[in-house]
Length: 149
Picture 1 (cartoon, rainbow, N blue to C red):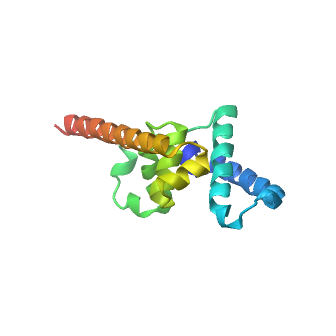
Picture 2 (cartoon, rainbow, N blue to C red; picture 1 turned 45 degrees about the vertical axis):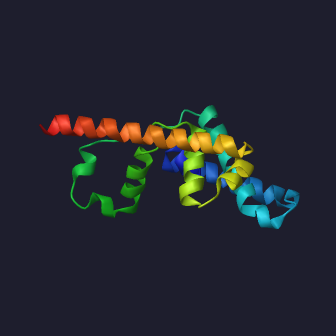
């Protein structure tokens, strides 16, 4: 969650440490242990948003030259960097929703509860995020086609 919102590995790791410290200090406040995952993700979301707002975090920059090298995609960090590229056009809440929906397999209802927004708002933001990613990829495809001609 932290990496998807912040986009920088070192900063995300720092934020994640803060998340776990916060969870450890406040675990007794968790009323329903079955809701631990949502509770943890909510803290991670809030910490990540706070981190982005307080600090100017260096973001992952996409370089065509970097990603045309053979076998580059086989490395885990490179895969994460490439995946992060798809998050480029998204706002923080959209990044969180995409990550929760596709990576954590949460329902729109669970996402709404985790992020404290309505289910219909989650659906709208999920739709918009998908559209932004599609538009972003379409533009990249057009640029790649133009540069290869």
